[in-house]
Amino acid sequence: MKICIFGAGAIGGYMGVKLAQAGAEVSLVARGPHLKAMKEHGLRLIEEDGEVTVPVTAAEDPAELGPQDYVIVTLKAHSVPPVVPKMAPLIGEHTTIVSGVNGVPWWYFHKIGGPLEGTRLASVDPGDAQWNGFGPDRVLGCVVYPAAEVTEPGVIKHIEGNRFSLGEPDGSKSERAVALSQALSAAGLKAPVRPRLRDEIWVKLWGNLSFNPISALTHATLDVLCTDPGTRAVARGMMLEAQEIAEKLGVKFPIDVEKRIDGGAAVGAHRTSMWQDLDMGRPMEIDALVGSVQELGRLTETPTPTIDTVLALVTLRARMAGLYHG
Ligand SMILES: NC(=O)C1=CN([C@@H]2O[C@H](COP(=O)(O)OP(=O)(O)OC[C@H]3O[C@@H](n4cnc5c(N)ncnc54)[C@H](OP(=O)(O)O)[C@@H]3O)[C@@H](O)[C@H]2O)C=CC1
Ligand SMILES: CC(C)(CO)C(=O)C(=O)O
Image (cartoon, rainbow, N blue to C red):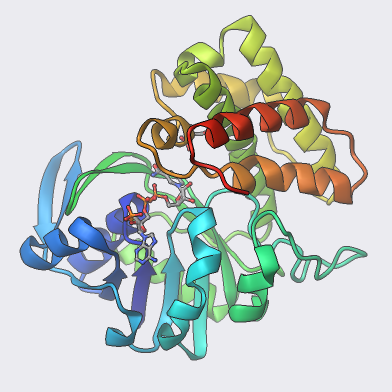
């Protein structure tokens, strides 16, 4: 089974080391000093109980790697549409694309059934680049739970978690989902195949939608913003609006908003990825994490006053930092 990880930064690098260590036929697409370091010295993974360095097959040009059974996309959401044409050499007749990106996935309305079947989302797939470029039938969904960071070129620090939930857009337990789940499990990762992946997408998204922009705006860590009465109320407001949208789309939430916010507080003094991106002058995943929910609000005719307010503030914050051009 040939697996290529496209965008082998924090999450893709973590997955890549685990798969390589387990002897899987895995290759990584990366760029810049990080690619140079991993080609010259291998890819180093630092975990709580020790560290390991593994030699990896890595390239910037996918043409060097050829058609794959699975392409696992672990780019930031806004980086995917522009590179779709570049991925063409990786894609053969039976290639599965695994979307390991936070936020509302571009394939959300594929095989969902009902009146919104086949709806495209401009916030996450402008110009239908992925829908038309990959074709939604190739897609296997994935919710990424681990936290990791690239601490220096060629070095990944794992922070917590090892679950990558997988799910078919139609909820079936397909052969391709089971085969990938087995490969990831053999590499020591948790990879359950879920019949209702969209429910998990929303529980994860609840946090990213609210905690990430609030932290970027306030520079408060999760423990603080989830317990301060004012910002907790803003997060709650955003989440309740998202819940109304999601439930109109058939989602069932297994927990309530208060429990989800308490879970965020329990993570501790964590700087969200959106705040880290702002600090480091990197584009922020505003469209995928917040704009997409506003777009779904419009589609389902659900008012989103709190989401609209926070989206306006964080978008202007990003624009003033020269990090948002939408
Ligand atoms: N990190 C985390 O803890 C978590 C992340 N996620 C989600 O996972 C996804 C990936 O995040 P993360 O791993 O943190 O992101 P990273 O930025 O660490 O990884 C993406 C990598 O792709 C590289 N890249 C970008 N464009 C190209 C290109 N055209 N060709 C080759 N390489 C390219 C980037 O290089 P460069 O640096 O040069 O841009 C970077 O190394 C995001 O959607 C994120 O929200 C989900 C849960 C937790
Ligand atoms: C903060 C957290 C854990 C949830 O919002 C996250 O996923 C991020 O930093 O992007």
